[in-house]
Image (cartoon, rainbow, N blue to C red):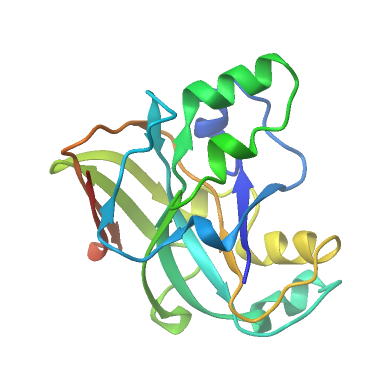
Length: 201
């Protein structure tokens, strides 16, 4: 199982990060050790600026490569919700030096995941989702705001990386990313339903 994350898939998030809007999906990887299914996350000692990034997540249900966009819908059956934790201070230092920034994104437990639900329960072009921090709304997004659709993402990734059953694709975060601290409580919602809860220890 691998975790594939899409960067800058929401225009307003690209703006808040002072980054160009991409012309094709931008992706990076997290190892399976990044996955966290528990409800407790321990703040890593190597960062002082850890940010939340809430994202819709697609679980691959069929192996494939070089998938045409028109057939991509056959390769996933469930939609979930996850957080792409980012050590923003480390990422900034890496960017300054032109270095890869996996250590800011791919560290252990950096990909908390909530429950998954059949995609048949959704209008895939109108899935709303939200992150609340200590009861206050911080990020609100909708799949209709994606620059690249789920099917486009799957098709693009599969040109370079073969997809296997169980692979997870984090589809990008909307604007509103921000820091978390020890003692915080995070809640993630899809169409108003609670999909994820996390305590920062």
